[in-house]
Image (cartoon, rainbow, N blue to C red; front, side, top):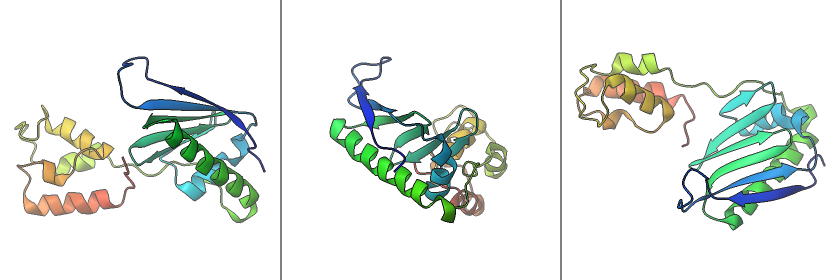
Length: 174
C-alpha cells in the first residue's frame, strides 16, 4: 500500500465566500510521485505534468489534481462528497501501485482539440448569435467542451457534422 493516510482541509473559495460549493485539499502523509504515470495511464488524465509531477482529471464537472504530496478537488457539494472522492482516489492510487508491473506508464495528458481546427469549420462571420464576440472565442469554448456545434446558429449542417466528428475523438467530460 503506497498511500496510507492524509489530512483533509475543506474550505470555501476566498475569491467568493458566498459560493455554495466547497474545495478540498488532502495533504498526503506519503509521497506518491512514483505512481502518478501509472495512475494517469489507468484513469486517463486530462493533463500530465512532469516537473513537479502531477496529473489532472476532469470529471463530473470537477477538476481533480493529484500531486506527489497533495490532492486538490474543486466544486464539491459538501465534505461527504470530498470523502467519497478521496477514498475512491486512495483505492485507485494503491491499485495502480500494486499493478504497476502490468501497466504501461503514461507521461502525456489526453489529446486536446485545436482551436484552429474548430475555427476552420465555423462560418467566421463574428455574428455574435452564439453569445460570444467572435468565432475565435466560440471555438475556444468548443475546445474546452463548454459549447458544441449546435450552439452556433450560423453553422451549416455539413460543418456541424464535421465538427461533431472532430470533437468525438476527445475526452471532454466537464
